Length: 450
Image (cartoon, helix red, strand yellow):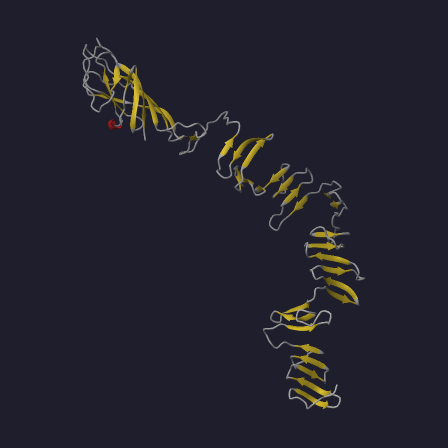
């Protein structure tokens, strides 16, 4: 080329032939934009400290450094061609094919590796024509010996794993440890007495099959039954059966909100509702030699039955029965209590029914006593009105009388009747009983407690 004009100030050369445009010696363009070391035959771009035949240096620490190669068919823009450089603060090397094509690597003028524009990766055999290792990026599958893997890892050909002493899949006696064919994988095909063991990083016997009897152990190398599990069993994250080591306690636990069902011959027998935790027994509950025990504060809910208009509760949460000693007092003079008086009670909810037997001492003369007969010592405090019966009589038991029950002798017959009402009973009149008698009476009384 011809050198036109005088030498610009930013081009420095040792010698210039202005006729031919030939530079001799070192050449510097704009300090370090382009530098030619004529003594070492090196060219620098962005640097004058050359370490190789071509040295490219990015002086801006915030920018990546590339050598960019383009071709007319692909264009000459920043998104065209091939870029080779350093990115990410000068620590990561990169080769970028900016076109929609593949990237190939050759040795001995033979293709050895290819990365397609879609991300598939291929390694070729020695002739460079057939890929022998293939990564299918869209399906995320790896093939060895095939470029169309149908599984996460597919190996077409022989797979051999060897140790220092024994060939894999066979033991030292050449017994067949593992055989795989089109239909199955068979461990211990020769049927020798050989245990099968799988270990994890923390559990030595994650799975153990005892060769002598076929028992299977999970978490144990000494299974005593066909399946022996040490620890918890979970099925589809729904059921957990756990044994507490060192005790005889077992736990059947649901770990999700789904229903738990026990069936027999296709017929549902027990249902635990996952949302309400209520348990339903189908076919009833039969206890052959035990009692049904309810915890304190719980009871039997009869909500499945029809309700009357005034229903306030359908829960039976209290039942009790027993004996007590009634205490009878009188404010008269003729009748006194003996020691043979007894009482029994039954409590259902807040309703109490008592049965009394009262024996009094003998009466003298034809005249009856005067005054009231009172009963104390009831098993539960009276809170609301109740009633009792003796023969044809009845009482009204009021809360104002506390735990007392008022009684009086009838003025027309030789029996005992309860007061109909009133906190201050009438004075007893003369009885129509003749001669000495030993009066007694029994009574059944029902009242309500809190």
